[in-house]
Length: 240
Image 1: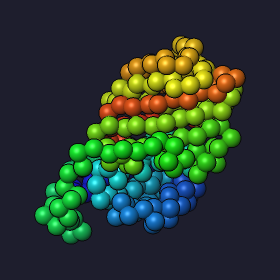
Image 2: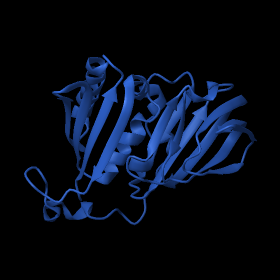
Image 3: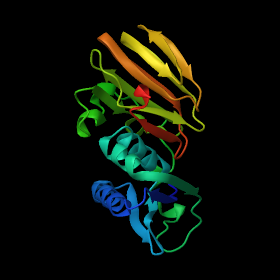
Image 4: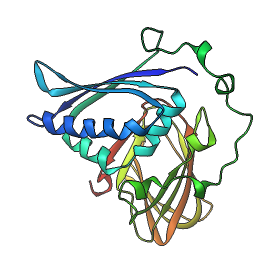
């Protein structure tokens, strides 16, 4: 199992550096209970008080991907986005050093995923409820539960006439969404498309998308390739 290192820098709007730091320190506290996160340091640049740096070390890529999926669309992420003027995350290849775990030390059964994994999607934790978005619907990110190494899998259930709180897009990942039940609409950049049961829609990486349920609600399955640090959230995007 290979560790994954990341460095991030975020520049807050003028005078908002302290508030941004508080949010990021709260995130660090949340990660205390996540065994997959081995290091999460929040630093302020001495000559630029509105510039905050983050140093991360993760046990594996799967642990990092699961953490990113868990917070996607959360109020905590939205609060940070409102404060940030510019954000950059650098993905690094960890070569070694103090604190790095040699691959040889990893238990034999962690070096490769099992040949298959069966998981009932409704048994996956509901992230929407966890982050105070339960009135909109349910969001279950099954990638970690499935032990998937290269594929992201998500299950969404929007309540009748409710709309996702965020739009999002990717730099690399193409996604496919399948309507399992109900119906509604999806906004894709400037287009709005009606959806019904068993419709499947492919969305290219850079297209901003957000879903809205009709009177019967909207149940979706989303899947596509996983890429590190690939997603971008856009708060209240549909109203723009």
